Image: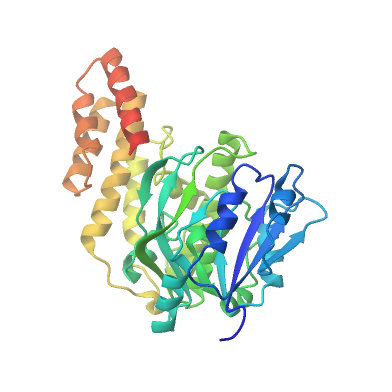
Length: 360
C-alpha cells in the first residue's frame, strides 16, 4: 500500500488542556496509513512538550516562528502534506477510532466525491456531551444549507488534496468562517461534497481568546460575505452586500430587532427567491417542505425579536406563520402563547425557555 495515503492536519495554539486526547484519538485510529502533521502556532504553554512526548514516526511537527492564527497555520500544514487525502482535527476535539477507516472506505467506493464529512457529538469545555450535530447527507440539503448554514463539520472532513490545492487552500482573509468559505468554493467549482450520517467525531463549544461579542460580530461579517458570494455565484439574483448581511442576520439567534415586520417579510421572500433563480448549472430539485420548514424556523426567530420589542401582534403573526410552515419544534407554539402574558411572566418563561434551548 502507498505510504501516507492520508495526511491528518492539526493547528494548535496553547492547547495543553486538550491536545493529548486529540492526538491520541488520531494515533488510535483503526486506519493506520497516515502522517500526522501538527502545526504548533507559537504556543507559550506546555503544548510542544506534550507533542514531543509521543514517540511515533507518523507525527511531523511544524513550529511557527510567530503566531499566524488558525487559517494560515492550516495552510502551512496543507502545503507540507504528502497524502492523497487530507483529514482535519483540532486540538480540543476528538475522532472516534473508526472515523478515517469509514471515510476512506466511502471514498474508495464512491470516487466521484471530493470531500466527505460526518456527524458529531457536541461537548462543553469539560468534555460532557451536550448534543448531537447530524450532518445533512443528501446533495440537495447540503447545497440548500449553503445559503444559511455550514453543512459540514470542519474537524470531520476528509478531502482530496489535489482539490484543496486547486482552490489554493483556505482563504486567509477569513479567520472564523474559513471552512464555510472553502466548502462554498468546492461547490462553486463543481466538486462534490458528502456527509456520512455516522457520528465519528466530537467537538467542543467553548469561549476562545476572542470575546464572545467580537467573535460573533466577526463571524456575522464573514458569513455575510460568503452568503453574498454564494448568491452571486449560484443564482441570477442581483443582490447587494447590505441586503445579504440582513438576510444572514434573520438566519441566526438573536435576530436584530431594529427591522420592521415588512422588512422581515421582504427578506423572507428574498430567501425563497434564491431557489427559483438558480443558474442552469446549479439547478437542483429541492423538497419544498424543507424550504418551508426552514423559513418557519426563521419566522420563529423573527417572532422572538418582535416579542422582545413588545410588538405582540406582529410576534403572533410570525409565530403562526412559523407553525403553518411546518417548523418542527414546540418553540413557535410556546412563543405564540407567550404573547398573551404580562411582561413579568414573559421574562420568567423566557428564562426557562433559554435553559431548555441550552440543554438541547
